[in-house]
Image (cartoon, rainbow over all chains, first blue to last red; front, side, top):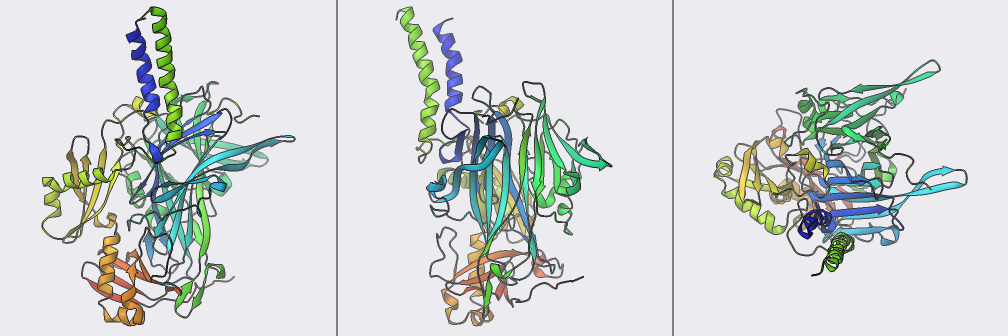
Length: 365
Length: 242
């Protein structure tokens, strides 16, 4: 083979390895374990944007150094945080009603001793690489897991919303929102619900060819069963705790080396599921066909009403988490006509777990 | 160059090119080196400026904005999916073009305007009207609302001698500091007879440096430039016991 032919092969490969979709502080290229030979790796791009705060703009995962990177996400964002109060008003849309900024972070938020590093100047984002507790234990054999987390806080008037994205060594991806800072000053003792709604443009192994399946557990006498219902057209789903519902996202071609279809399973991490009068809150999950103009969670019921086919397509998943904030003395106190105090963080979120992405147990030993 | 030496040279070059990313990764932990942004990097200040220039010069946008009062709400990068699915599977695929989205609010007519600029080819490629309730308020709105509120005697009386010391909270401020600051939330009324049902209204909360938040607040209608005082509540929800 001529030298020029060889270079023609090598250079593009190398160039692709060098040049990435994002760079500098916007690239999180995290091998696991954090020291020693790589076992798994995430390659993530992020950005801070005016409406949605901290967003993930791409995420790829590889299950071993010899495996190719698999795209998991095109785009992940908190599309809305809807906050209705118990007496009917106000009813806030804390992402789309105001172009709030991320608040500054420092070493106090993100100590290096805890694996933290602030990103940006001025810094608004914290990257934490940390031990995540037990990955597995089998009597005397044990493995602790690791994860990388990106978080920032949206300064939403009296509240700060912590937006956290976590990528684990076992391929799990998680999103959480935490509400903290100060109760609504005009009625600090009024109960309310914070509803973050995530828009997850999941593009497993690229687009299109993705499908969503609703998984339900049921029991009859001593017997249990699981039902898989493929979503044929744009729709919404209500989570039922007794059914252990999962939304499973699959790709037409992605399989592991055992020939099993590789999927991701989206599971809530809930304390409750809200149902407000607004139609977009009627479901906990929505699945729509990708449309670059469809970004607003408060219109998701309208998007889904088009009933476009979504099996084997480029799809977007919307997930609503809910925090029921019942005010307590720990939130603060009245001093004359002032309210003083800090509401400690309350969280809600979801987990996306790989299913048959690996060929066997990862992170062993 | 003798053939054997050429083979070693090829091997050296290939290894150097493949090993280069490992060095890059370490360097990427430091602040970015000046150079063109990668496809999914945030817009640079120069790109934001270019986007605004392109969009404001576009005839379609000019027509939508009209000659009356309007406000730029935000400019951000948007990523456009590639035409080929294969490109979306490649972790290092390079979209050829950088795009920016801008959203404006036009006061007369209560409409939003959205436009998209192709920064690589230096042209506006899309513009259109959007519903005003999808256009967020921003800090300029907040600053304007505070100025209006502090002209209102009801608000000045509510705040007392410190009234004119209040400033819009600086989102970049690291700590609350000694200042009296104002934060705001948009008001969405459910009552169709309420001016804030459709108009851009802001509820202003006054945070005193050492006392906390005043529970009384001001609601400013930015469209009519009218201010009202809202008395805060110390009551909690009614408990319904079984």
